[in-house]
Length: 76
Image 1 (cartoon, one colour):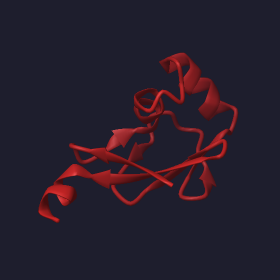
Image 2: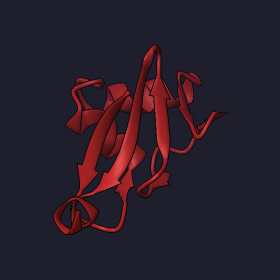
Image 3: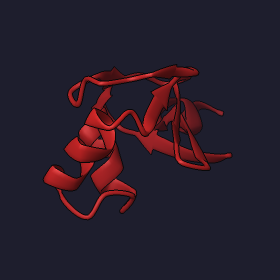
């Protein structure tokens, strides 16, 4: 499982897919989400602007990404 650290309180699902280069563009991310290819915390997610918080786990195809907080990394 990969980890993606965020500096803010949350990141939108569509932004995450673009940031990780899983989606080539916002339109591609939208298609992946609308087609049911993305799950958040083991539930298929159809909202492209779904807010993801530290601790959430996103699965796209065979890849799993855990959202972490950069703030927590600095503390530890």
